[in-house]
Image (cartoon, rainbow, N blue to C red; front, side, top):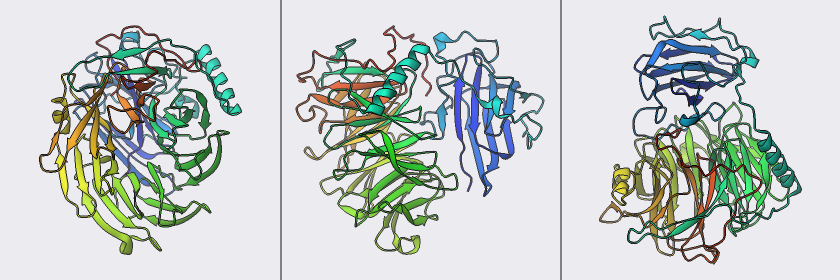
Length: 563
């Protein structure tokens, strides 16, 4: 079964930059068709794994004028658009971008900042990169591409860093090394939004702008004394979720961080992270130093991890097609499951209150449940398999005894399962149902689900391309429905929201008397703290002096977001 290489993209008004990241690719073949179909295949690695992808680009392209460069670490393409116009996204269709396709922020320019139309790659320094043309190939494969220049120097594309940004980041890193908490200045900007449709909460936000950084995800300590934020720079920053104080930064990963989480009450200061660099790393958030690591080997990406087992000694990891197990007490790998999935394993979770049971979910559309007692193998320990029918993005357990399971897919469908008896409630048109639950723009994607044990209620959290989020209640017993939004978070973000960290049990509540509803982060580089309307802090806010602050200018309504 073939694998997918990581692909990054950016655009100008007249062209698209596509970079396929695959070191030491052999027999690379690229095909570009006028209708906008981009295909790639190659083998790589010591075991000559096969990598393939096929993308339907947003619009037609000019094959004759498009160019390509092949290097030892990546394949870089400048794809000329058939008609000069900004694309709303890279791919046609309504689904979420595949997880292996990412925005290339080093090359990205916003539409109203693009002054390079018709002048080649614009302001990028291509370092003498030797390009050959797609033109004349008639859309045919480009063979093994053995004649292209594969110089390392040709592959490093970057724009000059702002000196002030460098200075602030250096100060921030120094503070992180010292482990010092930093007091934030008084308010630079505060917004309180009263959307006034019946039943909605009034919510304000504090805005911490992280410059051009892309925010991937959150991890919060159980006692809410710290939260971690993973960024597109492959670093993790740690803050106080109550005061917003910046504590420090953990750096060591060399590729996208896919999940972060604090281990638990026994070692509350330890943060774990997994990455496409094939490692799970443990960080001491008192010193921000790495204290241990686990390696998948064979250049496998790690997309998810979970701690559990009947003795709480197991660490499970979801990789390219495998599930790996370590005994985290001695760093020893104890098992590898290789036959249950044929695509990337995007999720692994030990089931709450059933710590010997592990659930895995994959791009192949399957959810598997394993018994991890004894010597773990697929012949004797695979309990059951559920077929969702499409690529699975995120899953979670809920219910009084955690017998229920929610599942969000990469095509934005939602399904509810009983993991023991396999009953299912499916919402194939979940986005349409949610969009009917408010008068704002259509819901284009789902970020997460949130469950309140106190209220025994589940919400699916949906968002718009302009950054507004809604908490939509899900009815899954009897009258299956997605109801009207019970909380709306609007005005904080200007792009797609990637992650939500709820700090209250219900959309109308707040956390432990602090008046904080939760935190959100996304592709605009903003980290927003949301307050419930009864927050005692409603008249006070701050913004970190150590982070790059963006201007508050009105955004051009024609500007498009990367996704």
